[in-house]
Length: 182
Image 1 (cartoon, rainbow, N blue to C red):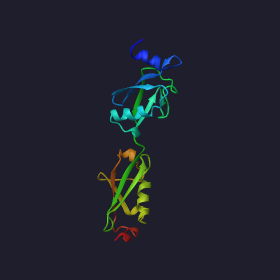
Image 2: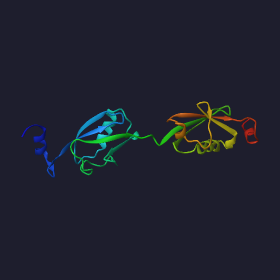
Image 3: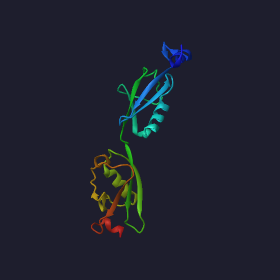
Image 4: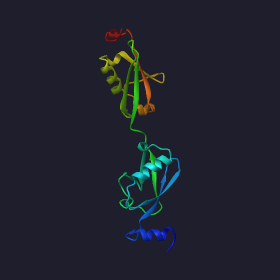
């Protein structure tokens, strides 16, 4: 009895199976990372280390085993994993992004940072920005990448990324509400 197999049998077994199993994590771009883990250990460490080795953000990845999302506190035993099984690391879009709204309608810059869901209509962000300064939302044109934004658009539809900046430009002096900006 020599080598790794012999050592596994001596260390212990679970229902005749070795205490340790080999797992492969496969990244979205096809790279692979291999682990030798205890059957009774939580997979949290495997997830963190595999993301680190693959240069991925843990929060942007879902781990899937046989169509089941793997939770960090689950173990190979709970998932009935076998030696050599593959866990897929699937990239997921962040559900929320940070967006800065920058308005220059007074002598100061009026910058407000928002954290919004990518599926939220921009009307909520625009209204929240204007409410902060007690102004009507129709007093402003909101611009991003040189384009005027519509109320019904979403960051997801526009393919906005985390850290984008939107400019709030006043319509001076077109309406009664805008006159208070002067």
